[in-house]
Amino acid sequence: MLSSFRFVATAIIIATAALSAAAQDIAANADQYLSTWASQGRFSGTVLIARHDKILLRKSYGMANYELGVPNTPDTVYRIGSITKSFTALAILQLEEKGLLNVTDPASKYVTDLPASWNAITIHQLLCHMSGIPDFINAATFDPNHIEVALHDYADKPLLSKPGEVLRYSNSGYILLGRIIETVTGKSYEQYLTENILRPAGMIHTAIDHTPDLVPHRATGYRWDGESVINAPNVDPDHPSAAGSLRSTVDDMYRFDRALKEGKIFSHATTAKAWTAYGHWSAPPPFPADADYGYGWMIGQEFGHRYVGHGGWVNGFVSQFNRYPDDDAVLIVLWNFETSNNIFLSQDLSAILFGQKYEIPVLRPIVHPSHETLARYLGDFQFGPLVAKFTLKNDRLYALGTGQPVPYGLIATSDTDFYCNDAPSQIHFVNSGANAFNQVTIKLGPKEYTLTRIPPQKQGE
Image (cartoon, rainbow, N blue to C red; front, top):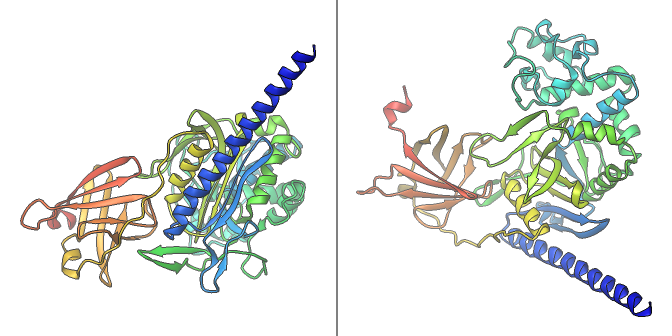
C-alpha cells in the first residue's frame, strides 16, 4: 500500500513538473518572439496568455506615448474596438433571458425611426451581420446619441442584400443593437453595460472611451508611415458606440474570460447561443482571416483547438481576444498601433501556446533608393480581384491594396525589395528586361501573389 502511494505521489510530482516546464517554455518563447518584434519597432502593446487559471505571460512592449517617452505597462488602457460587439451581443441575450425581448423580434419594434424597408429585419439578423442594411454610421450626420438623423438620411438607400441571406459585417447593425438595449431598459447603453456586465465581472478599468475623460495609463494610438511613427487621426472614441467604443486592459479582459468560464454573469444557455455559428465571415482579400460568426463572437479552430473570440480595429489600435474553452486557455493582445500584423502575430502566439511551428521575424537592413529608382514602380498591378496601386510621396513609395484602409508606406531592403510595418508583406519588383518592371510579387504570410502591371490606357477606361 505504501509503495503504491509513493508511486502515485511520484507520478503527480513528475506531471506537475512537466506542466510547469511547459508553461515556462510558452512564456519564454512568447517573450522572445514579442521582444524581437518590439526591438524592430514593429510591436507596441501588452499581451496576456493564461491557461488553467495560471497566467503564463503578462508583459508590455513599446511605448504608450512616444512623444512623452512613456512605456506601455500591464496597466496600460487601450481601445479594444470591435471586441465591444461581444459585450453588446451578450447584453442583448441577457435581456432575452429576462423575457424583455426576443431575438426573433423585428428591430423596428424597439427602434421606431427605422426606414420602412428595414421593418422586417430581426434582432437575430443584426447580431450575426445578416441584416443587409447599409452602413449609416458613415453618414456625415451620424451622431451616436441621435442616430435618427442618419437613419432619416439613409431612408431612401436600398438594402445591400435581402435580410438573412448574406453575412456582411456591419458596424451599423450593432449601433442599432445598442439603441435596442436603451429602449428596453430605459438606461443608456453605457449604464446598462457597466451595471450588468462590467462591474459584476470586476472590470473596473473598462468603459466607453470618451475624449474628455482623464484616464490614468491611457495609451495614445499610432500608425506607421513607412519607417516613421505618426499619430493616428483624432476621431472621437465613443463614435462607434455599441459597435466599438470600449477601452480596457489585459487584466480586465482576463477577468471577463474567468467570468465567462465560471458562469458568473451569463448562463450556459446564453453563451451557447452566442457561440453558435450562424454564418461565415471572411476578411477582404488578401488578408488570410476567416471564421464562423455567432452573436458578436467569431468561432473557429487554430491548430486543432476550438476558439471563440473577436478582434478589434479602431483609429490607432488593434486587439485580439481569443478564448480556447476546451483547453481553459486565453490569448489577449492589445496594441496601440493600427496594423494588420495583428492577424499573424496572434496566430503565432497561438502556435506557441499549443506547441506548433512559428517563425520569428528577421531583422532586415534598410536602404533608401533614389527617386528615379522608385519612379519605375509607379502604377497599378493586378492579380484577379487583388489590385495594388503604387504611388510616390516625398521620395517614399506607398502601396494601396484591395481591402486596405489607407496606403501603406514601404521600407526598402534593396532597390527592388520592400516590406511594411502595417502588414506582414514582402514585395519584390521583377525586372523583365531593359529596366521594365511590369510584375511585382507580394508575399503575405504563407501566400504569394504575382501581380501584372495594368497598362495606363486600360487604367483610364
